[in-house]
Each structure stands twice: as structure tokens, then as C-alpha cells.
Image (cartoon, rainbow, N blue to C red; front, side, top):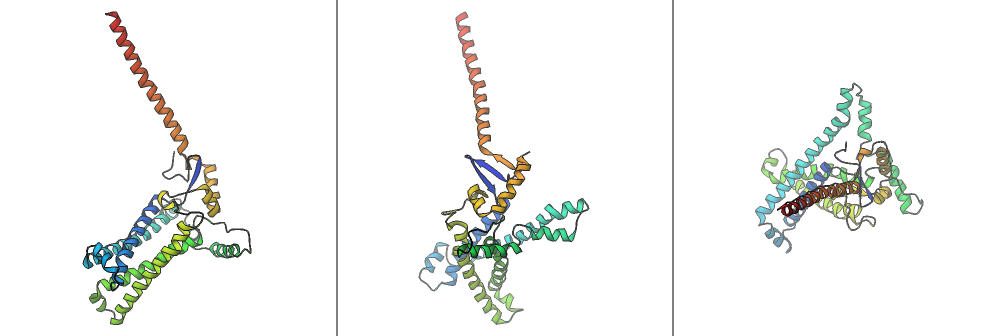
Length: 300
């Protein structure tokens, strides 16, 4: 029986390997959309004294509307942040804690190992991969680091969100409701919130548009755009080149259980044969009825 998400898809004779699920893609879309909206509305508010800011604010419908859009995007991003925490704990329960408790084999040590070896958890191997990358980049070694499902650069992007959103969310809340915040915070804390909010936003934009965009899309082996955020899959050559350990792991799983493999080409061929059989039946039926009509006319 075919799984919901096959680990390997064969299309046009080429293998494509699963890297992110549909749920993870949806979370990325929401994060990407809210981030862009926060950037487009936040920068004109911060730099309102520059000539370019007014046309942007006018485009969004004026200053009040721009502020509302900025806050809606911020609340949505914070909501996604809390949902992601739920998503993490749900996966812990669904894939380890729940089955282990039902089978009476739960142990805290094994739970710790499950978390430690989860795809986005920083591990000692990441430190080794960084050292190996530096050696490779400086021509000290000819061997590239062999990455797992997510390498250290992607983990940096991922964990940056866990300090970025709380800083932006809390300071943004104080700036949204300054009177409420001043009821339990000193006045200078509101001023610091403004500095922290805008500076953290500047840092986030710099990291996303330089660091993340280069690693995810502009890198020479992915240029001009990686299909990952659209399909959730990577072509075999890129998967093997950049995520060798994950490529080998998936191949091993598929060798043991072929239901994790979806051959789209074979499905298309099977569909063609099925369609040809249907057409043959229909055309045979039409031909039979035509012959029958002719014979009836001949009898008359």
C-alpha cells in the first residue's frame, strides 16, 4: 500500500528524494509570506523620513493600513511559532513517546536519543562538518562533508527563528501597546524595545536575503532556484552531492520496502494502457452497432 508521501519519486526517468513534508512546506510558505509582508510594511515605517517610504506606505493604503497589515503579519508569524512548538511535541508523541508507552518500552534515555537524532537538532557531527567544510574550502582536504537530512547552515537558519521571533514578538507587543507596557516597565524599556525590534528586523532581513538566499537558491549547484520549497523533493544528483547520508538512508529504506517508491513514469504507462483498453472497448462497441445498423438496412 502506497504511503502518503513516498520517499522517492521517479519522474521522466529521474529520481527525486523527499526532504520536507507537505506540512513543513505549508509552514515555510506562511513564514515566507509573513516575513515578506513584515519587511515591506516595516521598513517604510522605520524609515518614514526617506522619500521612498511614502510611495510604499501609500501603496498599502496609507499609514494606518500599513500599521494594521504589519501587525496582522506579526500576529500570524507568532501564531505559526506557537503552532510549530505544538508540531514538534506532536511528532515526539506520534513517532516515539506514544508507540513506546503503548508497547511498554518507553525510556527517558531513548527519548533523549530520539530528540538528539531528530533532523534539526544540533549535534557533534555538525561541528565536525563545519571543520571539514573549512578544510575543503581552504583546499586542505579534497573531501566534502557528508551531510544528513539538514546540514549545519540549514540548522542555523532554523534555530535563528527561535530567538528572532520572541525578540520581535515581545518588543512588537510593547510598541503596539506602549501604555500597557509602561504600566509594569520603566520608560527606557519602551525605547530599548524600539531599538531591539528594528535592529533585530534588520539582522533578520540581512540573514534571509544574503545568507539564506545564497545557501538555498543562488548557490552554484541550485541556481537560479531550488525546487525544494515547491515540491518538497530534490533531484538525485543534488541529494547525493549535498545530503549524501540522507540519500543513502532513503535508498536503504526503499530497498527493504518498495512501497516508499512512487514510479510516476510507470503509473503514466499503466494509465495509457488502461485508456487504450477503454478506447478499444468503446470503439469496438461503436463498430458493432454500426455493423448492426447496416445489416438491419440490408434486411429491409
